[in-house]
Image 1: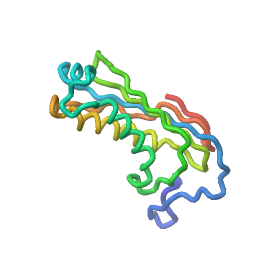
Image 2: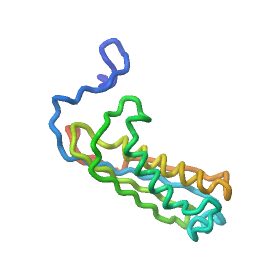
Image 3: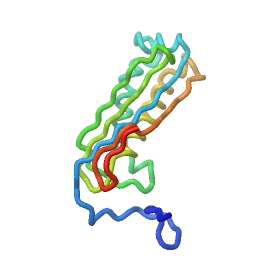
Image 4: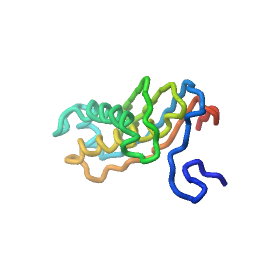
Length: 156
């Protein structure tokens, strides 16, 4: 198997994308956080000790997408054209689902940006609500869909 992030000697390298055409690319990732019913109700009502948990988590997710190459060593810095973050209450968990869609026109995809955004958004949600429930669990972080690029479209 030929791994694009390894050179002929097996050393890590950043993939050279300079010859690839710039195309429109989109990626959507999702994940959930499960918490106690009391913590869920407090976050939903806006009564958590640290304030607007969902608003801060949404901003953290957006910021994380923009900083992905600073966190993931071989990611290319990309000009992101759009980032959408949606947080949906999930009373059955109880908890919240976070979904992030990232868009760019570039030579490589934005899967890592959407996955990083979801991860950091959920971690921020944990941080903001940990006074209410330290046993919260991050669940099922995954890529839902990607569009564009040489490998084509993907949907779970």
